[in-house]
Image 1 (cartoon, rainbow, N blue to C red):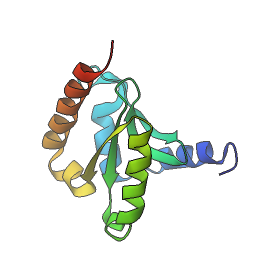
Image 2 (tube, helix red, strand yellow):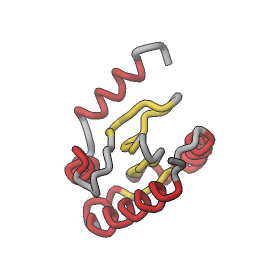
Image 3 (cartoon, rainbow, N blue to C red):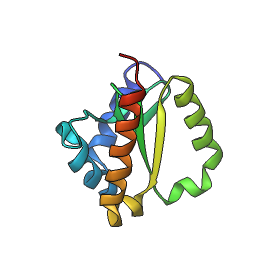
Length: 120
């Protein structure tokens, strides 16, 4: 992508978040989840990730129904992000909407594990 195009794309995604993304962002923003700071629709390499906690190098991705048809793309994307030192958690949109508390607990648990494993 040309310089600036990815940033504009990320801004567009922020303005047009899915219902699942909006709901999860309500809990992740401003350090509401255990004091961990997350960004939404953040560019990393050639990709824009749904949510990232930069200090923990933790990415949270929400997968809508289209992800069933793009499993190879998602796997390549995850490999790239892992290669950059990030860990990726994936949840389905319906999980974020219907089982929000369980999703938040999983994210908080991952944050605790990653924070404990991070070098000082």
